[in-house]
Length: 280
Image 1 (cartoon, rainbow, N blue to C red):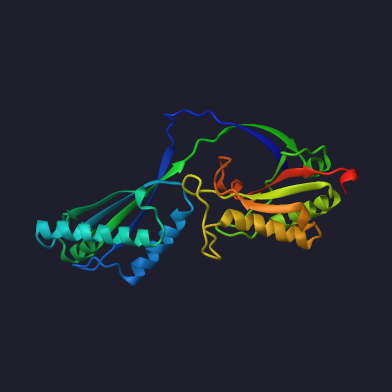
Image 2 (cartoon, rainbow, N blue to C red; image 1 turned 180 degrees about the vertical axis):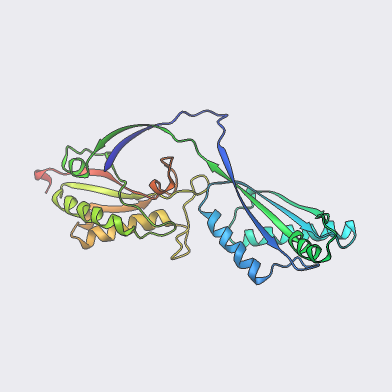
């Protein structure tokens, strides 16, 4: 189903977004603030997950076990928090998102059993990370629904936008999901029939901060929306659609639809020119 959609957004200067929390803990050896290889790998998986989220802020809190003086534990807990912040910075997490980097000192032991005490102390040597994720309100939408065939065979005009919302992408990649291939093949047939239509293929992404583009996990470049549009461009070219009629561009995350993020991993066709027989 392709939709020509008019979005009506109610904009207020004091609008509040709901938030949810993503949490992670990093554990340390006794008296250490360097992150072990195992914990580093766990942390990188967490970072990868939140890079595709719309993060409002990140809080980092360091803790120690109850062995050592108060001043020593306070300093060590701060060093642990700082170490985590450094790793975030190394992996392109915007420092302005990190609102707290605090050492909280020791966590008091709540058991007298020696065996349990060793285990609990190990769990208290940690950094807690809380990423607060925006949950945007779903926009009010007025829709005029058309089938793909009627949209592309209909009375198109310059400025019309056809949303290919059955062309769905794997998270973090520019390749479409297998179940979308049949739809893409049908689009190629229809666009070959409409040789009078010139258009721009616009790629979109979900879940990034503000209007940032997402990182293409295959190339590690922050141009995923463009990569998705380029994927469709070259597919259509291989199917016979003239490159003279097409161009592609990445729209980053400037126009989220709201609701399920998979629908923001999308491509749209913007009609840029309609030629008549005299122009051919």
